[in-house]
Length: 196
Length: 265
Image (cartoon, rainbow over all chains, first blue to last red; front, side, top):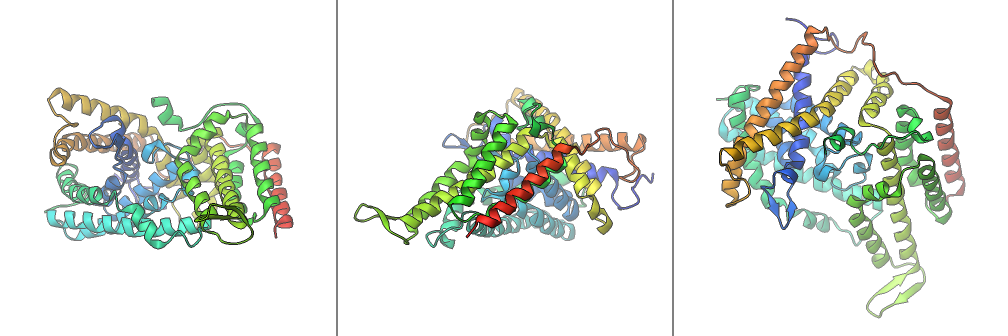
């Protein structure tokens, strides 16, 4: 059946996979608010970065990156899809917006790795690499965004930006390994990408 | 809860701002984000603040909702304010606690930057409070239309956004159902060490992903049998209408920019 639009080589179902994943990212960012299985000190921990890593691993590079773009766009359009049910263009001002932008690039890289090497080890390694990249891009963005929006004086150094990011780090790296394992498991069922 | 998910923070109303075309509002807000940087003294920041308050008044949004939108950024604002007041060492000393001196320039800068945040967050909040995500998506598609010439998939992006928005309540429902089903089978998500909990999440996430992708496939089939074949020649159910109000809105933006450029140092 050829029901493809003339301008793209995308099937309709590919578009919808991306939509579905963008929505899953929304559920993931807030799942701990209604299923309290990861709560630290009364505060539900967001799985937003976890789903950011999963995007590329599950959908492959192009669709993964597109899904993350859609997620960012509906968030900016005002749907409460980011962590803590936040959304709207004011997210642009928030220093952590860089993490959401970094998902797009990272999903592409993660997808590219697992499209080439289809083993379980590759999935885990790809998850870890992606998480490192998300932190690198996100923290740098945070530093520069803060310089721009707040015209931060010398008191706000590059070190402070990183110190800010240390507390959630261990949890995110455990989750990155878990994301790799889970994505491999999901591919067995979903069969979007070939696996070994 | 479900209502909140579909409409985001949108509050229906019939004020001047509500009736504006989403295109006008989008252009306005995105231009405003850049214009804010023109302000660099008391007069210009005052102008921005007055303008924002005027729009809040016209939009007839209760202040409660705006302050609610401020919550995620409050910490940042206070942090920035303190950073500027404590670390800038210019101008006359206003307060002297011996070990801590607060300078005039620092206090000024702190207030200015906090105002910048306040104005940005208020203005963007007004956009999402008076416009539903769906009409923003429609407006965005039309505004980005020229990019289609560069082969950017504008229509596809807008379509994916609308469908995602539509999926949100469905998938929230689904999550709830799966969670209850697994709890009925005796899975315990809220106890035990981290490793056990992560293991318990797998039977929650796998069916969720499978059902989400199943829905996506079903919807794709439904769209194709109804003759969906991309953006070309597609007609729309919700029509956008450019009104005299929208022109007024953009003229006010130009006037504001001119005033800011005129009064800045």
